[in-house]
Image 1: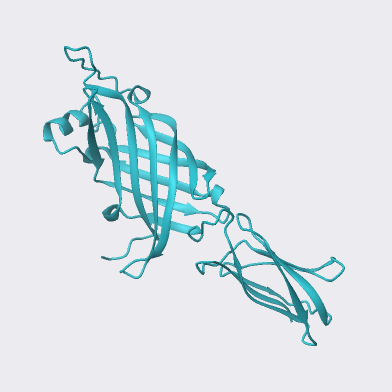
Image 2: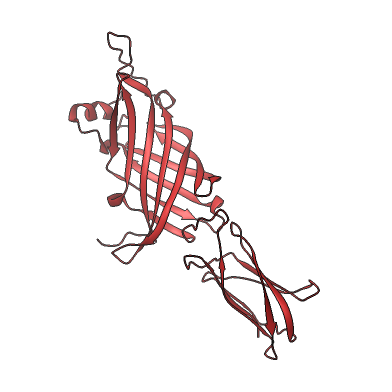
Length: 272
């Protein structure tokens, strides 16, 4: 008796933070209940027979309203209610997502001699994403093995590991921890956080794009993201600045970080 409903996204995910409100034809609230972790809404207070309005709301989703008729059973059977993300983009369901290094890349691009770019990547990294019911409360943590830098040139990589740059013997890890998200478009966010590199901690914002969610061949569920950021070497005490005869710095003062990330739902990665 009372109320029965399931609240789902367009993709079938449970909306755990949904709230269902039932009003009578005068607009008076007669029942209110929240969804559980499976998106199920239950209330056992019986209602008199008649017509009611069922309103479903959730942070980040467009609200819905529909009319329901209660019979002698005293129960509103609302069935499955589908909520649509405001902005039209469905997001991954709340919970823990583990970064998959085998299907992700962490790269950086620097100007070289003022005329070309040098690209590098870190081959060792890991992390997790905690997606909250209110996406703006979500969190990201990542750890990178600084010595795993790879630019395709052994001599250059050795120099990048030296005290002139990453100083990997003293500072073996690069870490990033987010502190909040700000919407920047229907499928874009600015991730605010702190990057610690070479023993120096600085605020760094990531321009994040959500690329979609879907099943993988190993029985898991994956979400894909892309992100970029601009860093200044001097902000992290990397002041090496060899100047060639033309007066141009051999390596540019800024770095562009480029992330292509896949995250798997859960605390661990599936066996591949």
